[in-house]
Amino acid sequence: MAPSADRRSSGSFSVGIDVKNTVELHSFTTTVGVSSAPSCITDAKYAAFPTTDIRHILPRLVPSFHAVASKRDAKAVHGDSLAEKQKAGKVEKFVSEPDGKEIKHAWFWPKMGDWFADTGRSDSLGLRVLTAFPLDIIITETGTSSFGLTNVALPSHSTYVAQILWGAIGWSVGACLGAALAATEGSKRRTVLFVGDGSLQLVGFCFDPALYIAC
Image 1: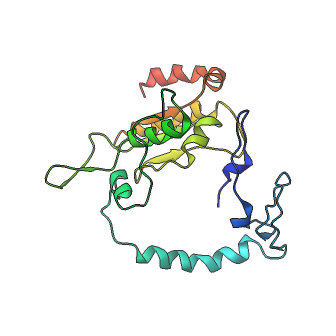
Image 2 (image 1 turned 30 degrees about the horizontal axis):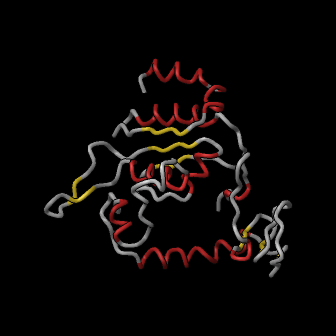
């Protein structure tokens, strides 16, 4: 239903998904256990259905989506907090301290996920209390940060903005400016940007209107 992270790689690493465990729905075909990506090399070739595509399959899947959603317990409008998700075993808990003296990606990005504004926490009486500010708008640049936060659990109803389809470095700064401007309306949500120095230098002029309108 969206671009897959395995379609993008960086100078240091790539993201791989075992296609043996995937079913891909496209506008022109459906494949089971084999990727349609030309660069994908795999021995798993279960089936391909070139005359059956997403237009045929998705309408049949929608009732199943509704059935799964209807079985879920009704939650408050603010949804589960990250702490509640971790307690229920829905997401893994992050490692509180780095392994050794080096700061590594495996520790840093989950730690950032815990830093984002949560939907609410419980006080000493177990009562739900909301955060002091509304939930974050999180924007990640193409590359390391978008890879790092792809699999990090976020609080319910936070907003995550990223693009991996075109690989256009520098886009996140302009996206942040637009999101920050929109966030000044209503609840005035905090906007968080992750961007590298190279991408930032391409569009540094975005800071001028940001300072002018005091996002």
